[in-house]
Image (cartoon, rainbow, N blue to C red; front, side):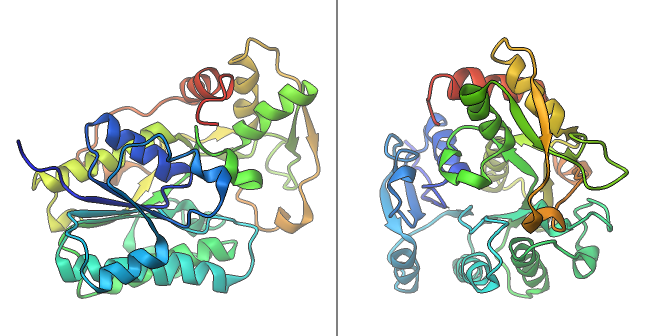
Length: 333
């Protein structure tokens, strides 16, 4: 029997990381090192039922890398501070830049594949478009410190002459799905809409504060978390099978390529429960009003050209699965 690869996944107590572990388990992969800050009890339910080799605190793991305590075959780096309302850049710099650099250096030294999470927040208001080109990185103006930190690491990675042999940085667009409940304010609109419906029978969406967008018609590229981890899994497989060449290294958008409105998102949360949409509009909080993306849509040509050909879930399909199979059953809540 072929020995299973040793896979490091960071951020595994969180949303995407925990779903990634479940995906790997379903593929029969259990030789996993789960890395995160595991102190928050609400997050523990996201990984306790998973199958893995070892759970490691983030700082302990970094110390172990220095001492070469593990033989690792790939790092999937999903750990980050993702709060877009945290304006202390030093926090983002430590977790999203310096932490990522440490893992990059290890992957380079050991010559192993490295996949990391970037973000569509790097695109800011979208003045430069949403094409995952390396040439526009210096022109991008993110709207918050989180986006700045992600763009700073992207720029740093591209500039390195010493790199992991094969690597990718994935610009996640608006991700939703099971295991996001602990994110509180930063959880998806679907999560909040579901809970508002349960409590009040209606959903409140932000009014538009721009004349070119009607209330509820702000557009985002929403991607179901199951589709997102499928892309990462495919990429990992391509790397292990030696199908991923250094020419493919770099940044990739990870959305669906189709922007949809927040109204559609909320309406489908009702429809998935057999309910008639009941939506009202409220003023957007002042602390995010000037830092708000009104439109995002991933250009997916680069990922398709790299060989990923599976369709993405439509908004209707993703919301229905999330609501019926998770939110209504409190599974992966």
